[in-house]
Amino acid sequence: MTREDGRSASELRPIHIEKAFLRNAHGSALVTWGHTRVLCTAMFSAGVPSFLENTDQGWLTAEYAMLPASTPQRKPRDRQRPDGRSTEIGRLIGRALRCVCDLTSIPGYTITIDCDVIDADGGTRTASITGAYVALRECEARMEAEGLLLKPLLWDGVAAVSCGIVDGETLLDLAYNEDSRADADINVVFSHSGGLIEVQGTGEKRPISSDELTVLMELATAGARQIQEIQKAALGL
Ligand code: UDP
Image: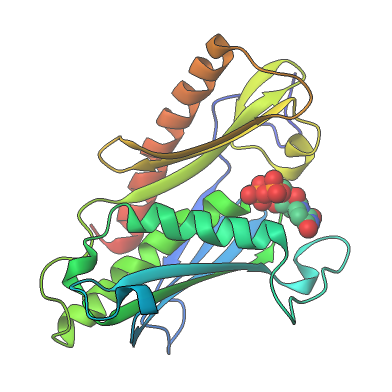
């Protein structure tokens, strides 16, 4: 099968990350991932959720949204509260980043990550996590410069990528035209040191075998290694 955009099965879409995209944000990154584009920001503020009051740790939380014209049919704004999908993705982004944070470095503070999809073509959650890590690094540096960090916040990096099975073929990094007809669709979050942070996988049209899962995880692992290099380049590391 040839992919509509001419990629090989194990090829990522072109990915570009522009750090410090916004002037007012404590950290920001504009991620361009093929035709998908997500603006990720990180802002710190004093205060923690009530369950962390009077403890030695701060908090990190995340929200995700798609702008109205990010999809072919206008998506109404979440005026009341986010839909189930956006809530689920926001929680995924927060969990992924908390996994590599030492929250005892920011007692009394909350960092809020916002990921806003400006153009959607599949893989928006993995682009969000990947960009949010870059924005969070910038936010960490800002907090350090302001004397607010007791010790380093991030002790590892985070990168995420999707893969799936389309027409019987295992493919890395599904675009929407592939995702929408995939037999199986898996999103994998890795630490830069190579550990697994989260695997979200679904046999959409049929159950998948553990052999297929092994091949998908190999594709994702190789993809994530390339993505971390792009993140490091964006961060000047
Ligand atoms: N999508 C859409 N409208 C929606 C939700 C999704 O057009 O309300 C499209 C969009 O291109 C998105 C893709 O479907 O990137 C795949 O959505 P999925 O829920 O699998 O998440 P993603 O792959 O973006 O993380």
